[in-house]
Length: 233
Length: 118
Image 1 (tube, rainbow over the protein chains, first blue to last red):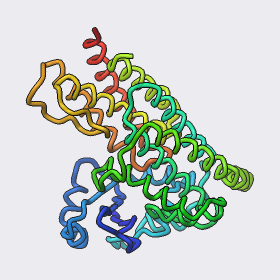
Image 2 (cartoon, rainbow over the protein chains, first blue to last red; image 1 turned 135 degrees about the vertical axis):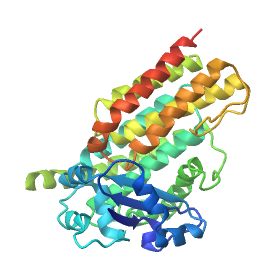
Image 3 (cartoon, each protein chain N blue to C red; image 1 turned 60 degrees about the vertical axis):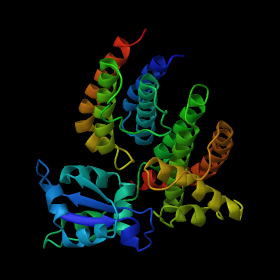
Image 4 (cartoon, rainbow over the protein chains, first blue to last red; image 1 turned 90 degrees about the vertical axis):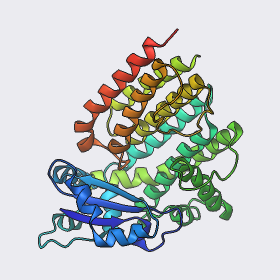
């Protein structure tokens, strides 16, 4: 079993809202892996600070399948992950070393746009504006992470992709701060922060318009990247 | 549109999205929206404050057997969704194994909703 941490704790920029992101790679049934995590001294020290453990377990065949298309999540792990276990033959390290470029960027940006259409449709009936803002915020963050990656400046931080990419997209300085504030609705959804403001349907419509424009701009770069990747593949 | 009709429409939207497991973000957000609508429907039925975010309904101390059945079906789906939807990119490897369980939970929830439609 291979155990890695990634995310803000691994990057060293954790704050009060951060949990400890853990990846467990290994086969086998049952909950043995959770017990192994519970007894891990370094994880115990990290969670002693009051942080919540956020573990994900992948079987090797799942990781192989993800590696085949250059999973962006695995790129994230390669960039900032830190192994907590050091087996002599760490298959995950080998797999990450040979990771190809992400091959699903274009379809991913299309999925983000479908999510926005869902939000628009949702506002026509009874809905929770706070939830719809959390959905928009999540799609925006992932689109910015994707945008940073295809621009050759990978950044998987919580809000740093906004700061990194906004200037390249020709956005005013305040946009990155506004996007970071919007993302607090996602943290609020996971009970990691209070709602940044009282959400109204008018806010949802305003952010839909902004997100659609940003996605269109990011998609231009993504399409160029995607054509190159598929031509090379 | 009644709350139940809205839940059923959202349930169908999850199934539509699941035809393409690569649309992971779409599946995830539609599942969350469905869970939110069901949690709001449950709150409406027991006279409590409607949540603004999807959440486990949990053990109800008030409400009819119908509401408790609905809450249990929602929570079963909630628990499955939280494991299958991570990471939030294309899901294929995990989805192959997990979808049949999510699909069963959706069927169960749909059955409960349809049985309570007036």
